[in-house]
Length: 324
Image (cartoon, rainbow, N blue to C red; front, side):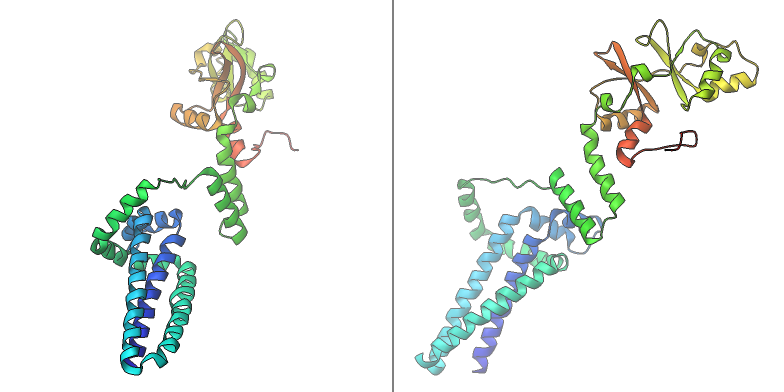
């Protein structure tokens, strides 16, 4: 009887390991795999390979699990028949069946699902080893599955990330402001320059021929730090001037300097330019303001770095802005 019990325990343990391994690699998500790989956890490379070839890995585990269950059951049945005859066969078979269901299926899979991170790190190396051993059996099965069609599972989509952020906020892993920032970042490509800009009629600009003395008072009265300068009209933008440079000239009694002498190259963008593209453009061009034009000819407004950042963090006010 001792030999029968030992064999049953061995079968249940091996079957339970296979079931737990299957549940672990199916339960762990790509984000967790990427995180453990970045942290260089021991076994993380094996996890990455196993999850990248998930169909092959599951096939390996199922083959092994069925071999254990079928061969184990046959061996137990043969041993019971030799020792006790038909009388004990049905009792032992029933006990083995319930033992496999509870201790080799339900419990291992529940635990492996709950501790998928740790379980996948433990099981993945030996899954790769078994896969190499059983490859002659696995290869024709894979070819047969290819004939049945190749499905596509999209991972890492915007909707999935948004859902993960909502779950993270709900569970307390992500702060509310962090969640809002992530959601707003996804909305950047939906906002266009024409949605963010100061419209043409509200632009504060100066003629390029004006002097620093003529423009200084108007600049001081405005809350802006940089202004477009133009020739005949706003469709003829000649550049951008910084308030600090113009006022600095006035403090040196250089009132007759023309604004064109302070001009910096203007950055021009199309009115349909997305906000995320604007952010990259401002960074690359080391600029804080862009002239928004329609069809590359007509000025319809100006957009600033602050306008884009407000799409991410909300309204930004400085010391000179009037209090709400």
